[in-house]
Image (cartoon, rainbow, N blue to C red):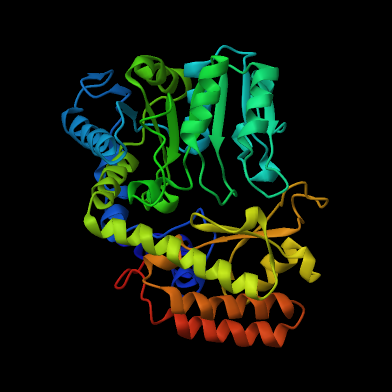
Length: 413
């Protein structure tokens, strides 16, 4: 039964969303397009099965095939990242981080994590989160060159004696010296944790450094650059395996979403294919072209540029707020998100910057030449953000352009 034959309201909304994705340019760096196979697994009969516990140790009967699915996901993740232990049950990145803290720490312990406005994540200690009320977060920032300063990090670690040093980001665009961070952690007797949610696919594709063999624990989402379903995962050294599994279930979650885990397993298989390495390489190549194009147009790039899939751009220097730029680009058919820049004087809902990335565009087959065209349109839309006619013209060009890169052919609701 197709959705439309039963629920026309939902079918209409899904059809409109499919059309939006097909006819626009998705540039939010945390979004991507899953394969048909991942989409099929996500909507599979695995959604019907309750399976509290872990493979071979369930609280429910009838889990023999579910165990096969989850075990495949675990083994493939181990192979991709070189992990000693993997838990694929976290429902998303934030729950994975919270479970990680619970596994490694006592309440009140100090965590040295990256400041949100300098590229970190909400769950890395922002005061609005529940975890910031449970643990003592001390937040480090980037230096005047826009980079993580290991000497400053070491000084803060020596001063605050954290139980855990946390690295990872949602808007930072540079590589991290994991070995250097581990050396600092060892000096002060701290554990190490990396949140690689944004760059997991680039690591899987061999385009960025892998912290999994170095750090005590690593969390990630399974969407974004990894191009799987929306979900989370924890990888850790064997000595923390029992604590991690207990923190996830029964500590924070009940029955896992096995349909999502099936889709994770499919995405992990895709990430092990040779073609995924080329995909990851192209993501970075596309981002570097955008960096060059925006620098040539005299935009201020945070952190001095990019080593990964994203750019954080100060648009206030062009006389436009982040919210205005996002709204104008939406009208032009280009989806980005407004974003705080380091020490932003503006508010989070109307910040100075925008964040954009290349994973979804790359999935559709776009390469360097297409990035140059897209950069032109972004600049035109920002420059003419109050000109509805100009934005409409760009929207028409974007729609025609996007039709050359088909998405989910044959899918209908």
